[in-house]
Picture 1 (cartoon, helix red, strand yellow):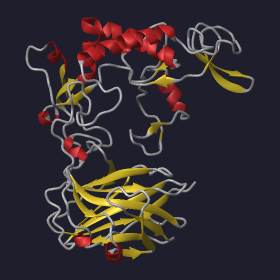
Picture 2: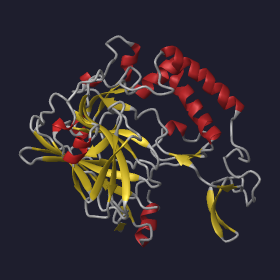
Picture 3: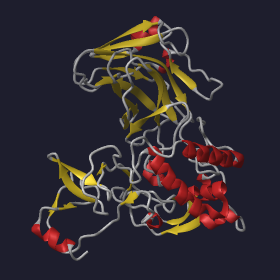
Picture 4: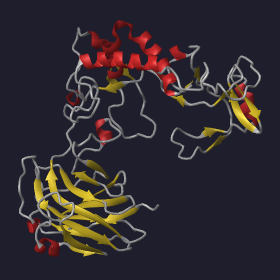
Amino acid sequence: MKVQIATLSILTAMACAPAAWSQGGTRLICSFETPAEIRRIKTTGSRITRVEQHATEGRYAAWVDFEVAEQPGIELRLEAGDLRPFGSLALDVTNPSDEPLTFTMEVEDASGARTVARTALPLGPGTSASFALTLNSPPPLQMGMRGEAALPGFRLLSEDHHVVDTAHIAAIRLYLIKPGKPCSMMVDNFRLAPGISYDRIVDAYGQFAKGEWPGKLTSLSQVRSRRSEEEAGLKLHPTLADRDEFGAWASGPTLEATGFFRAAKHEGKWWLVAPNGHLFFSIGLDCVTAREGGTIVEGRENMFEWLPVAGDPLAAFFEMSRTTTPVGLRDIRFYSGKAFNFYAANLQRKYGDEWKRKWQETALARLRAWGVNTIGNWSDPALYGNGRVAYTVTLGVRGTVGEVSSGSDYWGRMRDVFDPRFAQRWTTV
């Protein structure tokens, strides 16, 4: 299945539909309600038709057919292009095809400066969604985040964060990039909407404060009731079927029991073998720990609805992060300084003063119940030697050893395990 990318260059007079304010704090740019609006739209390698299906504003939407071309699309030119004080440009899209759809959106100001955004994830066949391109929002790395804060009600387009003069916007373009075959999409309700805000976006439990979803915590009583529910569920389903005490294949072949985990060849295939001789397929989670849940609050205090004051027992979960620049995030800010560990604070709320011991017991029970039989790397050493779930530890090989590319080399180049010096260095670890 080939992913299609769509190009709609949208240039229409902002007068293509009367600008109007809605109760939701938006302003309509274009909704394709009249034939005149359609005629004003410039098409490149595309054809636009007014239709009644999937209209989200008024009676009509626009059906756009794209040819196989370099960048087929539609273009909307704005005669009165003052988008202030709005912070995003939004539209509703329907994918009528049986293949995923990706598209690109571009905003250009009167000086020729442009900002470009693309679908972060394809729009599925036969589905609809509301998308937004934020205008002049700060790059998330400047806010100490890998990704932007959410804009409730919209799927954010992945943008380049180039600055444009929102008082003098000249054109909006929507297009596909090199579609492999003719394809179509439906669009409606081009509108201006509020932009992203980073004020008070984190609630007292460390959750996104501006959105709602099933299971979101809203009270301390919920925290405690979920503890009871989880404990009952773990007692009812403590482990998956056909797993032994190590999480190995209980009814499968049995090799020699050595008392240790090891690798062995069985019927021409290599296996891990549990201490009791049962074949062991390792399924693990790394970072099983309560010690790495801190988020920097210093310099970002406005992001949080609540932080404990001096004297609050939960103030014990403030910590100092002295992290160096994170790998692959050279330009990120707020990566060190005063932090608050919401995860550990929530464990205190859930289990009380014995939260560390109770968390360890629950973590081990969860892993067994979920079918996870290995504690992966970077986990809490307090879980080592637990006698219930196998674990891994980090060992560093020092000295001169060959290196090979790991692909992207995100963490750096990988030690060459086939270098004879690797085995020699290993004996000194």
